[in-house]
Each structure stands twice: as structure tokens, then as C-alpha cells.
Length: 133
Image 1: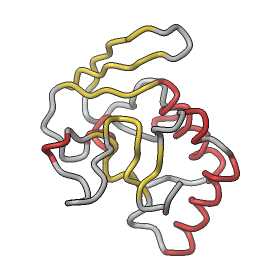
Image 2: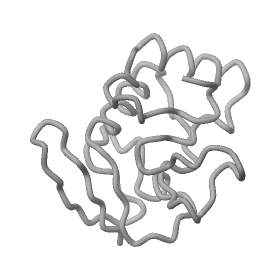
Image 3: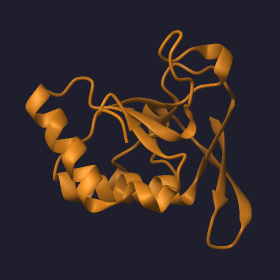
Image 4: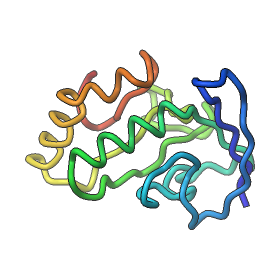
């Protein structure tokens, strides 16, 4: 069972949840992102994110109209990421789309950009593998 700390941007407070790997992340609609998908291969017993990051994922997923494959959205810096590249998976960035075709990945990227859903998160929220945002 994971301890999940969520910063609620609306109330300016931290919230704590306890969820199993196969349960939906807090603030996730229709169980489209499980704790296991969010965690990926991280060994951390405690995960963290923001309400806005979850809302951004919900919006993008809804507009995309199908599942968004997420490899992980949480890693501690010493747990890796993209080797010597960006290590930004602190619960507000999603390693998404790596199993999609190039055309579907482009459609997902365009959906995220045109929806402006990433702006909900602020400057730290992004989707990796989809190109630079």
C-alpha cells in the first residue's frame, strides 16, 4: 500500500491518501491512472503529486478519447529516468505515450497542447516522450 501526498492547490493544503497499486490515484477520473502506473518502478513507499497534475491528466485523457499509456510519473532522482537527461518525475510529469505509434503520439501531443491542460499544472507539469512543451 502506498502513502500518497497530494498538494491541493485549491485549499493550499497537503492531503494524505493510502491506496493499493491497482487503485486509482487521488483526483483521477474513471480509474484511468492507477497507483501502480503512477509509481512505475520507484521503490518509494511515499508518492507525491498535486491536484492540478491529476486534473491535467484527466483533461488530456478525456480529450484524447482513449487510454494514455503511462510508464511512470514518479521517480526519486537517484532512481533514474532518462539517464543523463531530465530527471523531472517528481509526481507532476508523466512518462507517457512511449508505446503509441508516432501518429498517435503526435495526436496526444497536439491534444495536450491545444487543450492547454498543461497550463493547469503550472510550469512544472509536462508529458515526457511527447516532445518539448
